Length: 388
Image 1 (cartoon, rainbow, N blue to C red):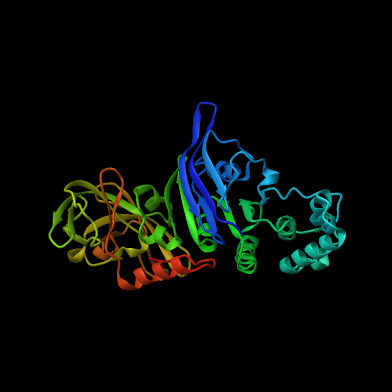
Image 2: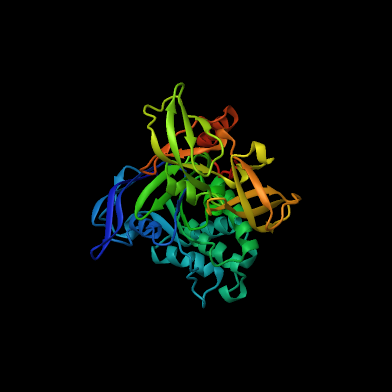
């Protein structure tokens, strides 16, 4: 097993910067996901670690050994691609053993490694079949098995589940989580699907335009985003934002007012926040933290545009009185309907504040949430996504 350190990594395609000064320290045995929108650089970063892309500056260190200039074959890694890339004319056994045979591994050791990988992935009864005789999930297991038999220090997985249907992706997520627990090896996983990242990872790297926007546990990203990009990217539906005027108060509080708000809201910030500035800020609140209340108790008002009934919950899309689009989540049986006028309450303990530069001013978290985040930080297993 091995930890991975990335130091000031820069990568350009021609004159176009794709990665700009990426610094990461991935611990031995972690499951870390690279998450971000298309074009953010996550696959390029993975390929740079693998040695499939030549970087322009910086260093890649694997288990305290710098591998920046080593070819992929010398880095002791295994990579699983979005495309299974199985040899169609070979049996599953041959697909698993072929690379070992080329490297001169003794036949008895090959047999042991193949049988062990097949047992772990529950494909022992498929070893005589060819890829065309397998389902999508079985082919993905074979592709992962081909990586396992190499017994590498590091697993790199590039969107390995994106070709599977929704139900099979859920099944394979569980299998990947269990595989990581059994092997205990460092895994780096690229995905554009935040559910995969949040449910599989010990920590998640959120990338934005080639830079690390935040690197933390799934619950840190959800409850304590460090900037507007992470706050808006993590969570579905995404966080709502309102422009407000902020004024610093004693005892680490910020009071916000705005033309969208009927009342001022006082938000308690974290004790270690050094500077609370006045002026224009952005207030953020997640859809499931907004309450529907009577008009006299409301902080804002709006007109319902659409109600999406999803069973246990309903997503309500509305326009505030200032014309801004907003989304809230209610219980599935709430009677709200399209064209209805509604009144919204923004509980102060669930409000996020961002300064004019888009950086979060850390808010105080309740003891239960803080404890949950701390427990997740100490976990070495795959994690579960939090609900705020």
